[in-house]
Every structure is written in structure tokens, then in C-alpha cells.
Image (cartoon, rainbow, N blue to C red; front, side):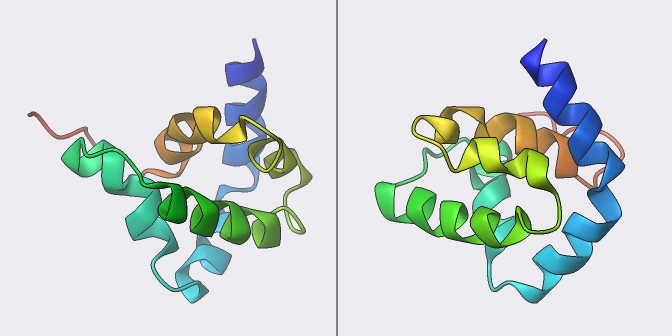
Length: 91
């Protein structure tokens, strides 16, 4: 249920989020790292992503949930909603 709620609100603001994300250095690379390579994110990378999401939350308030404690567990939902590929990669 929370997944559907988050996806709906992220997709509603997707264009604005992506526009702002382009201006942030390495945000999309960090966010998609696990999705693209399967490598786990380090604590420093999660901290950087949370910092960027805090900025994005000004434009899309539904993103505040990713800043809360244990919000990093929901990052795959954000990555899936913002993924620009037509189809997923086969590993």
C-alpha cells in the first residue's frame, strides 16, 4: 500500500524531480547504482542521496519519507519510479 502511494506521488512529479535531479551532481548515478550493478550502497553514498532527496522534497513533499530513519530501505522504490529505461536490464 505504501509502495503504491509513493509511486503514484513520485510519478505525478516525475518530470520536475528529474529536471532538478539533472542539476545535482551524481544523484541519478548513485540512485541507480544498485539497480544497474547490484553493488550495495555505502553509508556515505546513502548520506549523499538523502542530502539530495532533502532538496528534492521541497518540490515533491512525498519524498520526505526517504529522509526519515530507515527511509533508505525505500530507495529501491524511488529508483524504480525514476528509472528512464524502457525495459529493465537482464543480468
